[in-house]
Image (cartoon, rainbow, N blue to C red):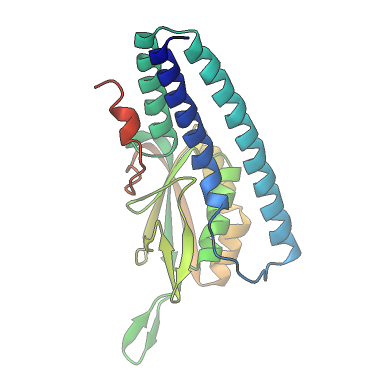
Length: 235
């Protein structure tokens, strides 16, 4: 194999490794905390981790096939194919704005308390939000955005000093709009209205209303990913 071809295959291997790392990143590097989940939540987490493992195995298989395909191409073809793979990855991890049909969900307070003349809104905790996001993914969501924050496999939902943070930024004040792209918007809307999340949100003085939209625009994921090395290959 020519030296240039070996160099290209090396870059492909690096790119393939990055694809797997993107999928794995959400399961690594989190601080260890005491597990206070109930049996249902543990089972839900186990199913989710099994899905993640299956997806990782699929990504590894796809990466192996990608490397094999690159080895069979000329240098010019390798560059073109690599750029195409980068564009596909950017879209998959949310680095591009997307449009399509879907469902608009509004989270609002059922009633607002007035404490000493100050309006007190109910809180959307990380647990509530994570449960809702998990159910949306289970019900067929393709892409999700909360306010101006695109939700991807890299998006953390955390408690920071008693406040909910998404993508390391504060959860916006109520009412909050969640945009969901899906190829079955009516079905997803009906699922939401009959979901456990809606019941639990109601208990916490929060309302979920879902409405089908023919056209929704979701922002790109703002936090940078280090793909510059790949973009410079063909320049």
